[in-house]
Image (cartoon, rainbow, N blue to C red; front, side, top):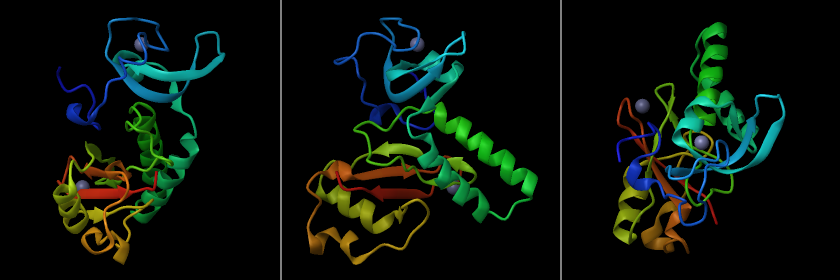
Length: 189
Ligand SMILES: [Zn+2]
Ligand SMILES: [Zn+2]
């Protein structure tokens, strides 16, 4: 399988084929499906909000929107304002990033609140979850911490001292495709 999405690496993507057999938008079977909880605007103007999985073609071409898209739009808003660009560029970049977000599948194993680090005027690529404690220590010690923005790490991110989270999937790792900076988020499951 080639690289279908810029923002989620193939390895990290968990296909939903075990649960769903067809794209919830175009109803095609025998296509790779990606997790996407949201809605699509149909040709007759009606909204179908019963979408849980979609194919690559639909994600790239159909007017789709994540459920609770506004939560991540607030994070985008905060980020673009921090860049001190012109008003026109700020508004334009915000629209580009929202569009990009709505064409990106959900991170598998649904985070409580959508939060993907932003860097170099782009959404960073989700690279996966720690596979074991060594991975966890490496990520939490060397990656920048992101929580709706770049944030200082707290002492509780010292997992060697305070113990690993119950589920390693509470930590998600990301990398900027432009500058290579690595980030992690931490959300209790
Ligand atoms: Zn489709
Ligand atoms: Zn960057």
